[in-house]
Length: 276
Ligand SMILES: *[C@@H]1O[C@H](CO)[C@@H](O)[C@H](O)[C@H]1NC(C)=O
Ligand SMILES: [Mg+2]
Image (cartoon, rainbow, N blue to C red):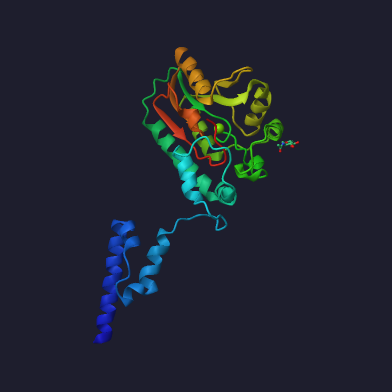
């Protein structure tokens, strides 16, 4: 009899724990054990385990790297020069593992749903603005050899990498690119790369199976303004020429801030560097 009651009590505790878990994870997290049964690992441990953040790396220390990355992505952390040294490993795991791909997929799935919701005029004036670096092409092969952004940017070695024209396309962005072409929205590349990098950029894009863009806009020699000034200025020119920017995607906030922003903007993850 006593044994049967203990079993019933345990079952009730499990049911209660499951109910609370389905309502709010936070309530479960802050509940303290109140009886021996609560301390029973079968009841408590799996719930706590489920709330543990998936960090992807156990090596970082001192800085909560997942919080730092969230701060970066939400544009609360700004004007930073390098990834905190203690987060090099975290960012490396994030970029090389499945996490970055998973986060990118969310962005592209939302963009595709948005495209499906559009009532297109189909007049050839509808365009979509794409950034290039870390949006269309990935420079991860370079950054993997240079601390994933934890070492200061070196323009000499980075430009040498760009000249190889070997940067892989980001597969999620390619899905969006192909979809837009299939519905008649014209891709426009708007990049902080400079005019002298046009030929190698075209070669790199073509090597990655990307073609059929309407325009490739590169920074002209002598331009001194900020990235926001440059990119919003180019979007304004497109609009003044009668084009309708139905969407805009980049990995930096400076890709998407500044008028005209147009209907929707999409921000891909990039915890490796900041361009203001
Ligand atoms: C930048 O890279 C170049 C080429 O690899 C190298 O010669 C130079 O020493 C680097 N500069 C710094 C400050 O590390
Ligand atoms: Mg970029």
